[in-house]
Amino acid sequence: MKIIDFNKYPLPSRMRHHTSPNFYMPLNELKIIPKHYPPVYKTIDWSNIFANAKSPQILDIGCGRGLFLLSIAEQNPDKNMLGIEVRQWCCDWLANYINGEGIANCGILHYCISNSLNFIEDTTIDEVFYLFPDPWVKTKHLKRRAFNQSFLDEIYRVLNDGGKLFLATDLHEVHKYHIEMLKIFNKMKFSIIDDEKHWNKPLTNKEIFCKSNNIRTYKIIAHK
Image (cartoon, rainbow, N blue to C red; front, side):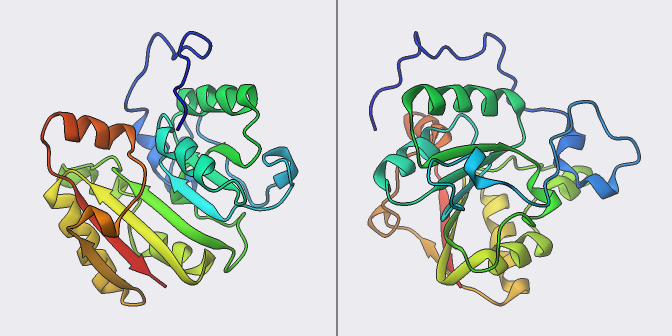
């Protein structure tokens, strides 16, 4: 991927890795809706996001600062790539970069994935990436993990036959959790990836950090 000019596209001076914990919860489970809660969509006019006005074929859920999102879009110019992110500042910065560089097949959506993917039609997605999600390791916070049976139902619905779900984390506990959820779901075959040649995808911002600090990562590919 071409080098990002951070003088032309400066990152915010204050970048919070985490946002309000309630932003990770489905809207229907909140008694009080926090200010700036991400919009909830039932339908989307794709002409507002992609130059060809067509729906996406690749999803990057929790795209963060978007290095992976931008790299995949560059590698797949014939496919629409949609990043979904709960943090507003990430979305604002990425939208500015995407629009400024005229990246016609890449879009960003400020959204909480726990509210489902109702705006995406059945069997229209080739690949879904869910990479290095917030781990929510404390027992009382486990309910904030987006990766659950409802999530898998939605991913299964939107994936084409043969479509793939890519998972990655740097925490073994979360890796085991992903495996447990996939086994319970029991509709998708999956493989634990120990050899990078079977992954062959661009690095995320988080993975670059892990590699530079000799932190192990864990990866899974699930197939519909």
